[in-house]
Length: 148
Image (cartoon, rainbow, N blue to C red; front, side):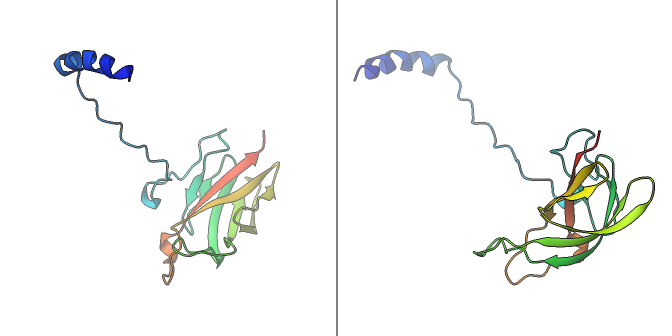
């Protein structure tokens, strides 16, 4: 009850000299769409991801990674409920300057590369029930941690 008289006193002032400021638009924190995804992670920023399509080479804070083949995509569709989230397994080529090696990498399970670890941290697009993913639309987000 004490605030009501104060509001009545301020209301005429606000009507005469206040402007309504619309709320700020929500910020989009989702990763960029595949066509706009950066192909190189900023140097020294281990939280940044470098995105690559199948057959595309990307520099991931040192190592150069080329996804060659999707071996498994058992992710739970986004419009389904699953007991297990699933995983993506890829065959990748990793180049360190002194030569390249073929290696298998599984989403969420970093692999040792030189003096650090490489992680397949994100896979786009999301999987949906009853749909198949065209291999050309895959984008893989890699992160390299370590290395000085």
